[in-house]
Length: 358
Image (cartoon, rainbow, N blue to C red; front, top):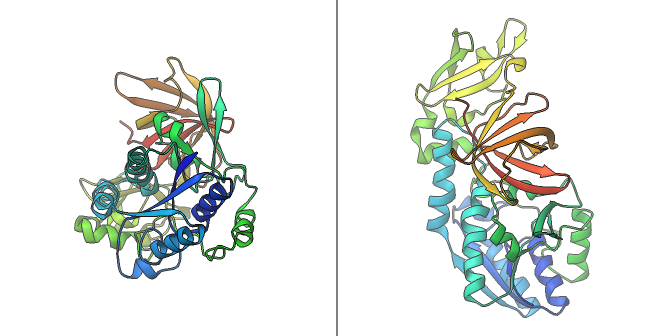
């Protein structure tokens, strides 16, 4: 096959390119330059900027394959970074990796792949694309600890049909690094990239405040019963379920308090005991389906955060409103702006973004 490989400069995508090349495919590498934030380009664990582009080019040169660098800084800024800041300003907790996959990586790279006349787009994501009776299916990776199917929940059926994930069956990252060493790739010991690559210091609130200063303005911390308990240092520092950073409002007597919701309009943070936070029904917007949308309630498992185990739930799809109602078997804490991924066994059925309750 003629395959376009998304090469970030890290070990995973480099191994993908090398494996496909060794198998005899005609491989073309493509690297997206997404930002150039000074310290971020030199920080260990960054990606898609600075040294990473050079690393991707070096791997391509070693393999003797064509390599393209696509400048997508402006698109990444508008579709991912500004969306990230706007989400915090609205009192949500965004997940920019999904937005990046949805808007820049898969959309733009699939377009490039078709322009180049290639037959598939391969990435270093840990997920499995399996043949099903109705076409390609997206499944969780063999390595549950590194599975990235959650971050691919906005991948459309057309994109999935074009995509390949060669690392999905590897048992762990050590096995992938061993392949990199065997193939003589200089990136074999390179540190993993961070989830939010464009935040140079790891302090999200600083990046958000630079774009949306209102997220750094102080406001009241209010108990669910209406009592004002203290003040906070800006909505950009908090998320639903958080217990740290509340200062004098961290406890009500002997009872620890946690963020129950963020009110962007009033700049209020509403807190309560942990038992008051779980929701019995969770609304989901911007649903992307990898199966025909169900016309009746569907029993499945759902994942409401990246680092949690899928839990049983029943979901109901309302085509008229474009909303999904998720009823978990046990009430669950759900942060607006995070993704909700739906599974049947290891198969990803689709996903969307958690919305505010009515």
